[in-house]
Length: 390
Image (cartoon, rainbow, N blue to C red; front, top):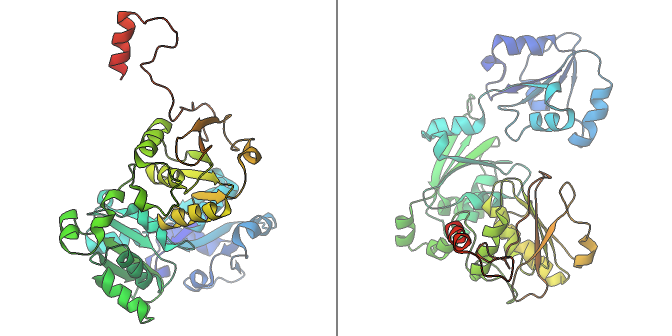
């Protein structure tokens, strides 16, 4: 059993006695240099920092260990932390988590934001655009940042999207002796970014988007984004960069309604064009992913740029190839159903799959639940059932 102990910025002083006993009794204590420095020395204890690269180096490191292993992590180890990596590598039965209060929980506590009204997104080691799918009038989002440059960069990103009036609070060293914060509009943070200023590291950002009426009346340019708010498919064509080869919004909305995006489901989009279908699929459900294939290199680049601009680049990936090279279908899934989605791009096709092998695929277009499968006229009772189903 590997014990993973979460540490706050206050370090050893904030740990309970059971967690202190685990740390003192460990034969091997693993953690970052900062975490190891937060706990007192123990005679004869083996202390090691993380291997690099972490995921590839951990199995070999742990294979040679004899005795008890304790890992030090930040806050909640399962909130964008090493606890997640260990569980994925070793399985839940081999890892026991002892969380501290996470930084996003502390940020909400400082601002008085209930958990049920707040989204959390991590940009640690990721692009800041990951916050974009969560932005809408009235939204509250806590953003876990990589370093002290991110608050000003985030302000610039929001201001560039017409949200200069959004309120952005940076909070650093939460729970520690050096805790501090600064609140300003995204536009003011953008000016700080231009000046090259940064906050201390170990920082999170809390973003609060004004309600729709304030955005519309502030002359911020956010009104142009109104057609793109929220997860529902059918964004206007001008929300995407394209050369005219794009599935029109009503067809796109209908096709995705038929395909039914669900959390973690995967779409194969063959002949992606602008990539609009894959982008909307990823925005429609948590953790949804897309593999897009486009034989034209310029359009493939455009599809990748559209995914980046909508904050789904890690989930929607586009490669330059022809459809036959993908005929094996998606791994980890049942045999795919190939679904034509009408657009000005000839041969554009989409395939829906899930990690659940038994999940049926539904065709995006080209059939109707009210259409009789035979040439004979359906009975009155059949017509009535069809109408009810519609």
